[in-house]
Image (cartoon, rainbow, N blue to C red; front, side, top):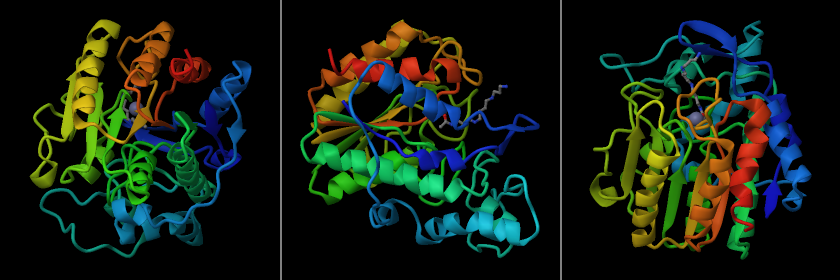
Length: 342
Ligand code: SP5
Ligand code: ZN
């Protein structure tokens, strides 16, 4: 299987996140992508290609213009205020406040376009975001050109980013942009299968009213786990999107037996939708040793995920999302990919 990777992810480094009452070094760190890259080479999965530059025209169809235009300016505006460290918001326009007036101050606009304190900026963040976007679209273009399955080693991840909000380490929703790009190239229907431990709230929000992109999400129950405010089983899509969103919230401690039943059900819905192409949002934070998560998948489970998805028999783009057990992220993520090679 071909992979796409850019070294520009590494400029997004040393940032902090606001997590459960503490300002901590972000769990989403550069070594994640390097461990995955090293594992691809170690198992000789296939060639690792550099991304081609893509314009933001498909991104503009899934993200608001004001939001997308803000992203490249954050660090510049933050540092122009004489600030260093990590640009992070600390105020958000919740219920009862004005959500229709974008403020001027950079830290306020950052809050306006965020749902948590988990999407900070340092000097290299925008370059990394753009390279991650290009990585997803380059991989999508290879699938569009006839490859059976391609891996986009995206960093930063994307599935928490919605049409006008960042959060949870995510800025541009790489999987959503890729799905839109594939539609723009002529795919009639696209399914996004999100197997990250956390609900892909951004992806769900982006396609919630659309019937051309089906969204299937397997994740920890948002009653007790981040992102908390979306991802319940009764969220089924609205309007033209009604019936095309499927959520599988699961309890802490979920292991392969229960998780794989949800995957089986999701695959049945996917097959019934009969998409032209599948986009997998691949998180391996379902792993038993993940430092911020509470599922119990083991290393041997990941190739089984790959084999099940490969058995759908559809052109597949695999987009990297989360996974924070850095030492094992390569073996687990690439384990899914090797499931396609059997
Ligand atoms: C892409 C992705 O996987 N983003 C995940 C963002 C998660 N952010 C908040 C996680 C809250 C975890 N709470 C437990 C703290 C353990 N010390
Ligand atoms: Zn996650």
